[in-house]
Length: 280
Ligand code: HEC
Image (tube, rainbow, N blue to C red; front, side, top):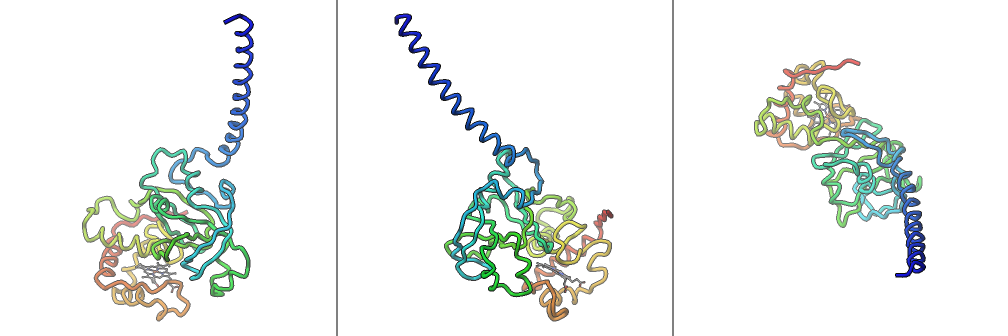
């Protein structure tokens, strides 16, 4: 190769690489800007306000053919729950055993495992128009904003949670802080642990034990355990029909067979030996 051709080639090579360089530094700086805001190093558990993270993912208009709460086809403005969670956990090495917990204005705190979210198409929506609020009962329509979570499914899926009044999202271990609500010495397959699992599934999003859990309903263990001031009969009958005690009760009737309610009762009663009260 002559010296001339060599320098010409070298020149072209430098030209090309510098273009590529330029191009990539350009995109790199763009991604860096996005990354600065969207994927800060986070450690589990963490909580983000939806207002603060909603710009990580683009807004879209989504048609929900089967909305559990509205009971009809709905069109919302919102953004993908899956994409938001993906961006929040992008830096985490292991997302097994993590759950998303939605913190709501009324104290409701339902959770769903990330593995479950990944199997569906979820959306965090805000209302498109006041019109849509008409279908809600007066008692709750003021509480739907700021965000309502819904899912795009082929058929109505009753198992998915549809929290409204959502303000923030927590990513935490499934079982986060469970030591406070299930003493470590309780055997995995014991009756107490069965009672706990029922409580966890049916009651914990609204009730707390040792201040861990939801706050819509009353705390059930501290300073007094519910079984220390309520009879077993009251417990059974109240849970089956809270409205027959208080006409405006915010607790829904929970149709569980006596055998299962008994397991929950036993778990709650046992917890009186494990009180943890942190005064602020
Ligand atoms: C959707 C939220 C919600 C769920 C789920 C829920 N509760 Fe409640 N619970 C409440 C609220 C709110 C109250 C206060 C009731 C009222 O104002 O009448 C309450 C009240 C109670 C009381 C009566 C306390 C008292 O002394 O008056 C008991 C006992 C109770 N709940 C147990 C349970 C158990 C056990 C479960 C699960 C099987 C459960 N709750 C599920 C919201 C809930």
